Length: 184
Image 1 (cartoon, rainbow, N blue to C red):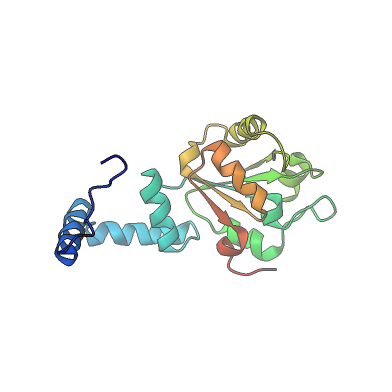
Image 2: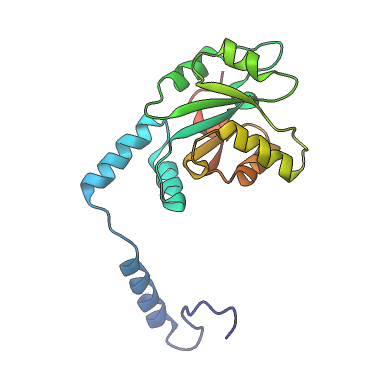
């Protein structure tokens, strides 16, 4: 039947079919050796992520995280206060084995964001919040440079920034409150 996922039917004997379905599905899912799990837990800590978040990004993309894109909203930076709060700057400085790139939302200039925040590898101009999909995609490609898109996580603080993730084909989107441990 079209649209059927070949799962258990709702006829009599459902409990047995459900059990068989779950057992077959579990056999398909890989069981990771404990050493691999330990390495991934350590890598999640280096990236400042909880293991569940890191594992879900890793499972969905099949790759490790190589960089973070931070919107200036997530960094709590604007034209009048171009320097990140100390706690956020320290958190970014503590990240290991990944790049940190800033996205300056207008009217903040990327050059000011980069100059005032040495924890960032570089900064690029962010797309306008209500820009068309093609323009957002172009800005995200520029921001990524040579970074592989599916290995980059966008840290944002505004609902419209989530669209940047889809346009840039990024690995994941996380809200700043979930990424940074302490809100300044």
